[in-house]
Image 1 (cartoon, rainbow, N blue to C red):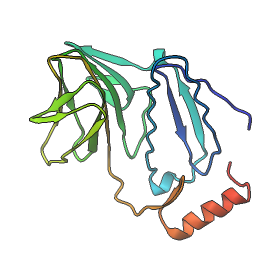
Image 2: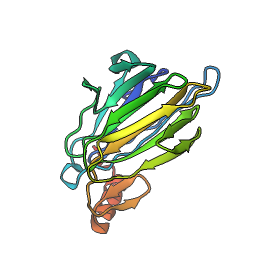
Image 3: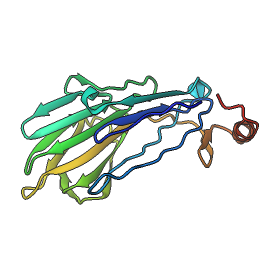
Image 4: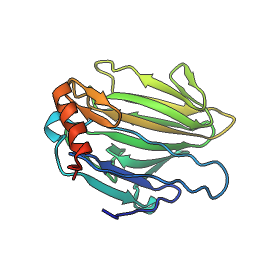
Amino acid sequence: AGHEGLLVPGSVQWMTAGRGVIHSEMPEQEDGVMEGFQLWLNLHSADKMQPPGYRDIPTEQIPEWQGDGATVRVIAGESHGVAGAVQRPTTLPLYLDIHLDAGARLAQPLPAGHNAFVYVYRGAVAIGDTAVPVQRMAILANTPGSDGVVIEAGAGAPARALLIAGAPLREAIAQHGPFVMNTRDQLVQAVHDFQAGRLA
């Protein structure tokens, strides 16, 4: 359709494929190492055929919470009373970019029943007695009665990590390439719609 957006360091692209969107991304390196993260969230079956949507969120529009040695960029969901740039019903995603000074710790509440993981992209952290080094993921136990997670940076260096959580859908998944539906028949129809140019 000719639409375009430009992402700069610290900004976020939030896209909802819905009944279909065709897009391309062309990274342009300026200097240093480029760090980019792409996360796909499944839509509830009732939401899969909604109109597609796209939003660029500049870094200055991402709310932050600051505590003792910790800064939390709240992309989606909520952290310590700060509502994120994105709110989504049904799955209620939590998407936090956590920056910790050396030795700092963050206690982050998590909704009961949410599945969650932490990905460390700079430095190293500890979650309880478990060390999580750089470029590693910790999948958090979904323990009944648990009220959250405590993430602590090592004493020698600052750390940065993503904390991602969401309510499980508990629905069947049929997936092929970028197409994600609930049944094989729906998946075949989605591919046919794409081939026929019927994506909106």
